[in-house]
Length: 511
Image 1 (cartoon, helix red, strand yellow):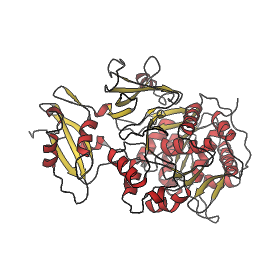
Image 2: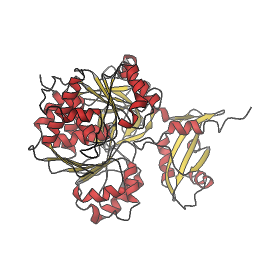
Image 3: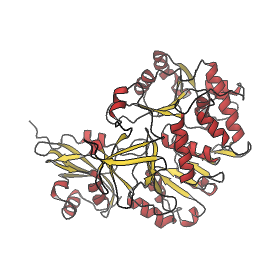
Image 4: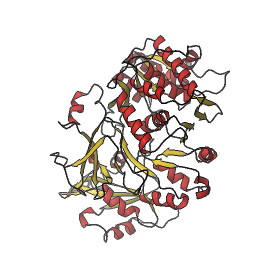
């Protein structure tokens, strides 16, 4: 038995001198460098006592070395566990205690603050920073890798062995570790290479973080299995995007990327004429953003839908209509259905219910949490995503919202997305978030938080008045608030849990 995921990556590599990455510091990585440097990291991990099945937790800044550490972990047969670089020491304490990694790799600047937590969890602490120059150390792990061999005998790992654990965002309680196997990652990346038509001629503009499934697996694994190349930017920066855009053929981003780029006068049909594909995910793309991008560039953004637990589930088509406000069709090999949430009874076209999926992309369960795992799967193997949605008559999947965001007011169900869509169409509105808040008479009161365009004359009264003609009375917000911005996580998702906490007492009568 070989190493399922890395054997596949190796088998699809172009020639050793073919380019893999252009780094913003001017370095260029070939596919031979990928083999050599990932082997160095695999050797270092083995020298630290890492065995197949051990966890390697990593909280570092984005770098090519961090990507090579991911591949080195896979080759060593261990389980890669990326952690958001914004997590605090208290949060890291939880993750290390839960995962019990053999090694914890952090940024050199955070080593002393995080050392007690690594020791508490029984993990060896190593550091990995961003390479600056040959004269400066990029961390203890980097220093060890420089003197390690470029030859490594990959650990035997089968399709069902774990390759990674990614912790969910934890908006409804403690984060849970989603266990992803070699075949979860391999099968999904192969499907995306084919569905999105990636080839060795592609150069992906990579401005996403790599502690998340989007930047680490969707972007990186897809390029590796296509034998293509990437331009690796440390973060999203419009200046850097426009600097490197002429060298790219494709870009993956979150909706915020596209909103920010639309604010740039440099964005035009001429500036993007050479591009093949723009992809958006990780958060809903406003229909207005989709329309504005198409008008400015001539390109229709391809929106898709995935989760930490499942990789990618659906995608708008490469050929055919990319319909704004939808996430397209189930990917090949993915079965998707919409069911009545309580009974699991399948629903017909246009009916809103719980989205469930099944396929080789779906994770193996939650780390050390068999009860939660059992609760999230149907007896026939379908995973309950927690997302509410529908499939329209043409087969396109629509995401209406998270199940926990459903508002029940006066006994009626209100789907926030329906109200948000009406508000977002109003002149002067950028976006909105609709939430349910405790209400003494109705159980929950529909509440709208609205962001207006700079300088626009938009008032809460105007919005409420306009909705009187557009929505049934029970769907109309009982209060509207106009704010400067909505709270978001690092991937651009609106954090409605924070809004619910901020406004939780507005309908409560003071004692």
